[in-house]
Amino acid sequence: MSDTAKISLKALRKTFGPKVVLDSIDLDVLAGESMVIIGGSGSGKSVTLKCILGLLIPDSGSIKIDGTEMIGISGAKRKEILTKFGMLFQGGALFDSLPVWENVAFGLLAQRLYDRKDAQEIAIEKLRRVGLTPDVAFLNPAELSGGMQKRVGLARAIAADPDIIFFDEPTTGLDPIMADVINELIVECVKDVGATALTITHDMASVRKIADHVSMIYHGKMIWAGKKEDIDHSGNEYIEQFINGKAEGPIKMEILKS
Image 1 (cartoon, helix red, strand yellow):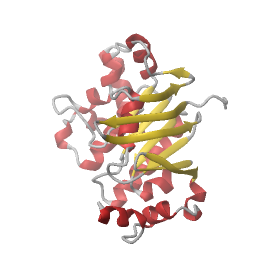
Image 2 (cartoon, helix red, strand yellow):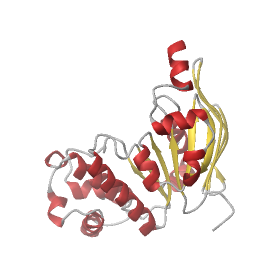
Image 3 (cartoon, one colour):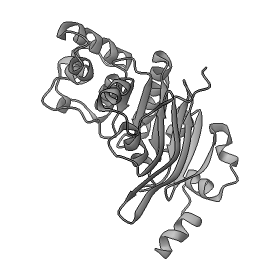
Image 4 (cartoon, one colour):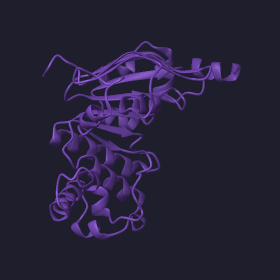
């Protein structure tokens, strides 16, 4: 494993007007690692992902992918680096007007990496990898259950065998059994393609299933980071309240004061 972090954030800061959303965030994700960022709604998890992807421009700080600085990089170079990424979106983000296989192969076709016949074959194989039969490839997204749509989203995320995969609240809207199925598939698929994974979630079942390391953002600051095995004895009152889902604690006290 290289000593260079696959993803490295240093002193990352992002504001929206007077509101500070990210306040000097530091985070290193090593190659092959599964990092999960936890935190409540509005803590800055999604903004962190959007800054890495270039959808938002940080006010200051550094974002490096494989040692390459992404802030201020040219459009062509950014596009080249972003081809390393796959992503499973929170809401599935499937195109209703396209059959399932074209959803899965969308990136392959958009980058003109394959002709339609080969892209369809790859899509069917990736669907099989997430437990869906070939006939599903020719259905429309609207014909699928929520769990099946999430599987299709995962198949799309791994379609190009990416180096890095982002998972945005991967189990949102799923029942506990299907959520566990998706978590298992994430672990298997990430291992199969040898990817580095970065997940944002508030679902502790997902954290315990898919994480190697965990970081917690609170009020735009990274307040704890460590191995998954250490999370239950972190000694941090904020993270203890969060992972145990307790109403009483410092997080609620601050909400009540606001």
